[in-house]
Image (cartoon, rainbow, N blue to C red; front, top):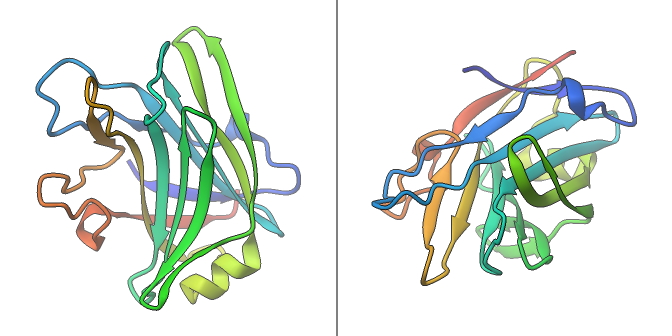
Length: 185
């Protein structure tokens, strides 16, 4: 499946965006593989990310996450949200970690797939472009992946949309990320 970052006007129409499914749990020996999803799009002013997981009784340490970078950048953008309600939007660079301004809202509800929880976030576009060293225009390529993780003792798990090297501790390495192409639609 080709990964794209759609461009839209404000406000974005999430119902027409591709939805990427987190279903790859390579280390899971039991049957606990929570179904989770992610969406991403650009507007003239913001990068939007939506992440959600289907868990009827999520543990507080249960989290969803998106990581974005480029081959030429040493910066990694990381949006993470936990079932307990907290979230973070961080930029990791060789000189350290710093928060990025973002507006985020918790999501919770149910649909035909079950009960879910998650986050919808809007990140100002300019700081993202500066950090990644790339104008996010049609044809631009960033690398990324969506994750569903938990360190809970009873139900630990590590999953991703595309295969990631959890066993080697390199789940955020370039080899665990796929190209996302910015598309004008």
